[in-house]
Image 1: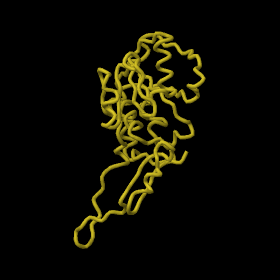
Image 2: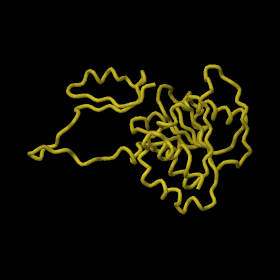
Image 3: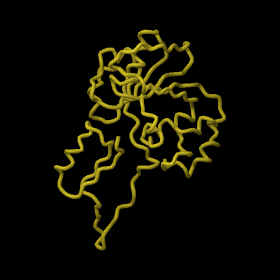
Image 4: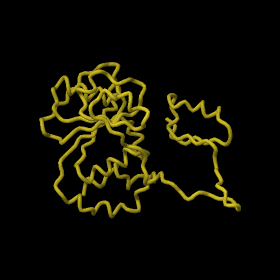
Length: 223
């Protein structure tokens, strides 16, 4: 039952997660009473933003927690430019697999690459690719047994890898289709002509939204 609780599930959060209605039912799902293998989730995220983390990957981890005991390792303190030594050794078989979340060249990717080469870590590894500023390095196929990409246009970029899967889209507990708003003639009424969802960060290029016609709305967290 512990795997169904905690910040990854979000019941104690001050931010609605879209999951509160079934919180009790989740804890008592029969899967949580079964023996579980362990997995390690490696990520790089400012702890100040834990409380507002509600994307598709967050929801996917909740589902994984039904089948695995998840250990979380935040490597946000790694400064890749400094090329720090990674002193982290895992006994073979500690985890069923290691799942990382981050871009190539990110603290997550640096950490997993280092334990693979420096410590000869033999755990199967998968990476949920978050961000595309840095192209995949040639050794990605050796470090990672599986690569997850989010949007279809990125597939070609990692087509060199023998095992790729599209995954971690949106948190459908929060973002889901609503009945359309209609006018008196039965015609659909749109609140906005252009909608952009994403953190307010330079590489999101919100400036391009200004070039669009009509009523515009940008939704996202300001860092």
